[in-house]
Length: 237
Image (cartoon, rainbow, N blue to C red; front, top):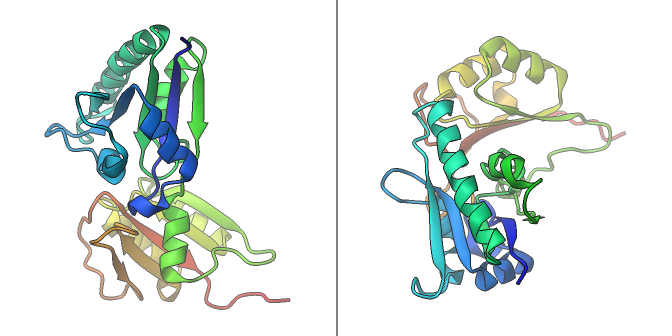
C-alpha cells in the first residue's frame, strides 16, 4: 500500500461548493484531519460532514489550535500533527486534511505541507476561496481589463493598508475580525468608503453583508469576515 497526505479545499462554507474531486478524496480517506478549537469544533469538518463515513470506519485526527495563543503554541501543534501524519502515511494510510476555502490560500495546511512535503507523498486539491465566494455574493466583478487587484491580511498596520488601497483598484482585506477598527480607519483615510463592502460568513446560513460600510460599528467582528473594496468608477476602454 502507498500512503498519501492530501490537502483538500472544502470551500467557503456551503457544502454544495465542494468539488467532485474533493468529495471523492474525502470519501476514500482512511484518516480525516482538520484544525479544531479547544472545544473540538472544526469549521472544515462541519462543511464536509455530509461526506464523512461513520466514525468506526474513518479515523479522525484533529489538530487542536487556540488561535489566540501565539505562534509557539501553533507551531508545537503542527509539529505533533506532522509526526502523526507521517507515521500514518508511512503505514500506507491516505490522510485527508480538510481546509476551509483553498488549502494554499491563507490555509493552515501550508504549515503541515512545509513539514512533510520532503518526507512523504503529498497532494493538493484546490477549493473555492472566500474571495471568489464574496464576489459572487456581491455580484460584482473583482477585476476588469487593466484593473489591479490585491489581497492583503487585515493584520497589517493602518499605514500599510492605506498604501495598498491607494495603489490598487480592487483590494480584498482578509482576516478582518479583530482588526475591523484599524481597517475602517484605513479605508476612510484612503477615501474609499463608498467603494467598500463588508462580508461575514460568506455562503453560510448566517451570511451577512454590509454595503456601504458607513454604518458598520468600529468593533471586532467574527473570524470569517472580510472587506472587498472595488472602485465604482471603472475603466471600460
